[in-house]
Amino acid sequence: MNLKLILGLFVLAALTIVPTIVDGQRRYRWGQDTETLELAQRLEAIPKKIGDWECTDDSELDSTSEKLLTPINSITRTYFNQREKINVNLFVLMGPTGPTACPHPRHLF
Image (tube, rainbow, N blue to C red; front, top):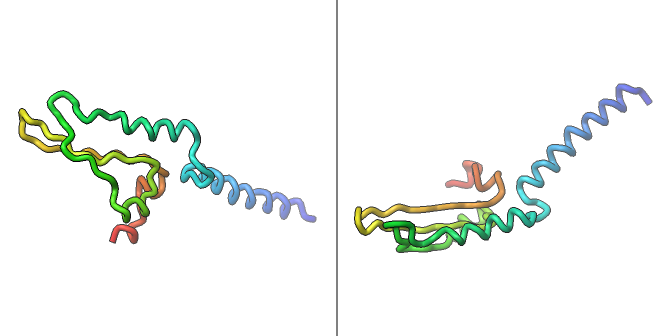
């Protein structure tokens, strides 16, 4: 067999396999590692009262968002500041980089 052909096939295989493995790890294709799961559980430790701010609503993602984003964990809360009379919405999402960070535009509509 020709040395150039063998080298070409090796490079082609490497350019196919390596990105697949990296993408699979980033998207948790083979499951989450222990550290990631522990970090996701720590989201629950975000206090419901922070100084003058108090949580007035603690809700879950809707089923469509859950399906599209495939999060490991998320926090959706509304905090109200009694002194300033201001509401703030807090949304923290932890999940795979693809759907969590930048869903494909066709999924948005």
